[in-house]
Length: 391
Image (tube, rainbow, N blue to C red; front, side):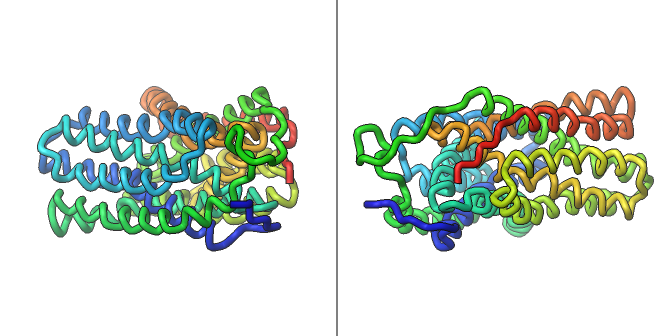
């Protein structure tokens, strides 16, 4: 099938891909919601609960580049519906798994489904975006942001109503979404460039991969993720312990941070198409440092405003960096997506315990000051990047 040529984003195709992203990442968000019930009803230890979070992170993030390499060698669009289905089934079975080993295995299975979905779906998000790749990838990323946030919202009421077996209901949306993606596969494949698979078609081959710039950009993603996960881990406690507010204020601050991120994604993607990827990425770091430093000297109310700006600046560039990675590695866009959406983010998240150690030694205020300095390092790396736009 010949490629469908468009100047902008194909809405139907992007709607399917973004919805698939949503229903895949719902299962990542569900992990944190299920753990308290596993501790209280199954009697697992807190260490065992932490191991489940680690298993989910490693299987869903660190494994993604392997699926990216696989999809680069032989594109497998079926990984998209299959990934959604496996992610949902794995999480659905956690609540009825007979013992901890089975719970652990189901968590890993769900994470592998998440890892399988992302590189191939990001590849097609690139294809269906036409010349508006940053805008399209931002729309795709918003699906994941919303899905992760909806995980606890959907899972907690199900478990409260039906007990841990209520997780079985998570298989239903996964199955429906997998069926939708399977139905859309023939149309989605119409956007695939001819000659993508070696020996197939006669399309013009993309120019060579630029690994140096890609490594620099991936380092920016690691730092950005460290900032984000550090804030997610400690903002609520900062409001309670440093600013002296209630837990409700702390949870509201956390929701403000994450909610603004989704809005920022929709804004910064189109800006990246207009002004350049590197410009927007560097600009977000220029804004982020002073905003976070001001947050360490602000009260609870103004702090909410600053957190909203910080969330928009951090999360808003997630889609932009995926596109940059694919433009730096045009021959390996599956691997590029696996690294920028999985491995680099996972490595950043793995650094959060280090920030926790700093908080134990020197306090939360000192930790927030440290986090506010990280955008400067990310900015220096971003400014060393060449422009990756090829639109």
